[in-house]
Length: 135
Image 1 (cartoon, helix red, strand yellow):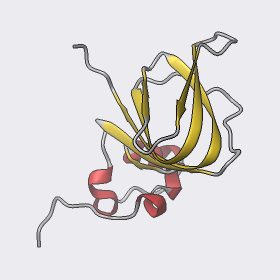
Image 2 (spheres, one colour):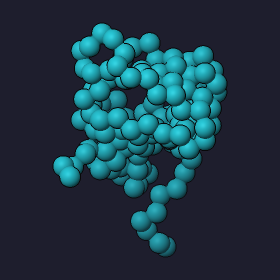
Image 3 (tube, rainbow, N blue to C red):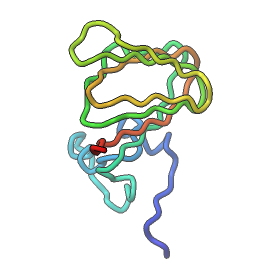
Image 4 (tube, rainbow, N blue to C red):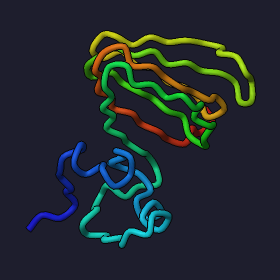
């Protein structure tokens, strides 16, 4: 049998962790009192990258600003139409707005920005987060 392969369905496998499919699953299990099964989660457990399968209905919006993290993030639109709003941490005004509406449109933001969003049409995203290394 060949080892070193993990396969599944992002929509199904991400349900435990708000649709984050790849990431620090062992840590997330501890934080959520879920038994960690190294073999079951396989290569999905990673401290290098996090991957989310996001599905949002028309009219959905994030009403609370997502706080800064220690990772750079990238959301790629697979289908739909959405506006992202960004601001510097602690500022009370929106600093920048980015609309993604064509298949493949994306936005990348660094770890010192807060964000929120509004979905204009049913949307599906693939979001990645990683720790940025100095260039």
